[in-house]
Length: 265
Ligand code: ADP
Ligand code: MG
Image (cartoon, rainbow, N blue to C red; front, side):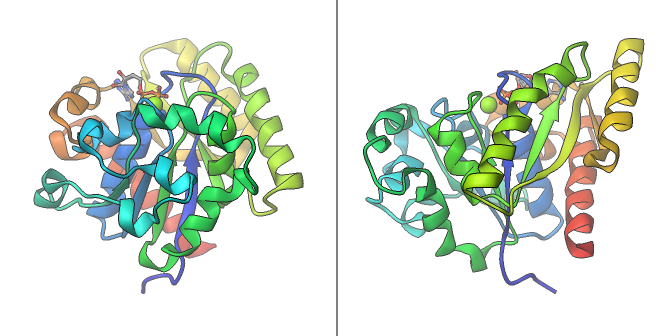
């Protein structure tokens, strides 16, 4: 049975290059592949999640920028990709491009500036099972708009030496948003990405994470896999680019883990 309202998740970590965008597009594709209705929102002016979903950010007439400034609805601005549909993992995309970097400044003087995305999503919540929001590598007004509308945060992280310290700022921001703006917000889970089991340090950090965060660490582990890194240059998620690769299989397993968690709670 389909749920009535979409579950909304931010994929966030204030560090760049940790695997946020790879997680967002592959989880979106994985969820679509197992039959879920998905909207992916690109909140990063770099537009990597948009491009990685097969949508040319330079050709977009309307983006998440127009939605934040309330000059378009999500229904008007969303697009889809023929490649995704042909690959049977189609999802809707609310894209981004460089224009979005201006939103930060333009929103400052506006009312409800941190709740713009939340407001826009209420109109389409019944159309999806999952909304996934790819956040920029900062704790900015854009990320705040994501955190204000989300039920939870998925935090991709590499199992390296300072992994735990790096989480402090994000955890504090999430606590503040929870206290002041969004009572529903919590960390859904930490996702171990780019994992290499041959590296002892990574295994140690992985054990530390489990000791420290318990069931907030997802069961699924995403391995370091070159096919995931190659996929964006073909404009498709790794899940579609090479479905038999270890990386693709891990993301489909992760999608299933997310579906199972959601139907349980
Ligand atoms: P972020 O969005 O956090 O900046 P990206 O998802 O763009 O991070 O990932 C950073 C780089 O690492 C990209 O070049 C991406 O292709 C690569 N990458 C991400 N996850 C993996 C993985 N599991 N295996 C190999 N390369 C990966
Ligand atoms: Mg990114």
